[in-house]
Image (cartoon, rainbow over all chains, first blue to last red; front, side, top):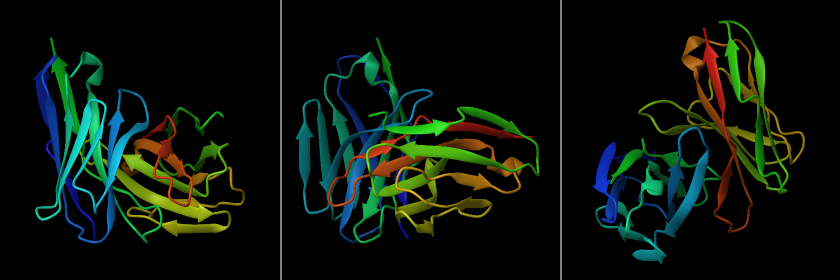
Length: 112
Length: 113
């Protein structure tokens, strides 16, 4: 079955770039997602990438996918205090219905 | 659109009590899912549905029942609550056919004593 892993905590200074990493195990055709969760709230989809892509950029967000190492990263440029949240990596195997497998989440803390 | 709504926001139960967590969406989405979120474990899939009348088990289905009699509603039932079911529960929905955005409700915080 699918397994998704993330580091638990990341601290950066405001204005720096943040890089949040994720590894996954399934080698099938898959969608990989990044979600953001602010305290007391549900999850908000930030971006996603399909496994036939290497990179996707959306404003301050850049997603890199290394299929050989099954490694996914989310880079946030010019990190702001409003970016402080928990970031979840998730995987959905195509043909598997709507089943998402989530990582444990990375707590991003942005310091002044 | 109200999006995905969940009620109640917070609930305290005693062991052995039953209750239903409500979830509704007004976007005519085919797919709906229930997740639980526990510290250090991310979100885990409990049950999901790909359309009215169709449900299936996720990763952690034991102790929970679901039904999908309409497209809009996807209630989650706890038949006999246990302290291990203390968690935050999220409902989510998604349009079928290539739309990857999954919409999450605000969550229900459940405490079982």
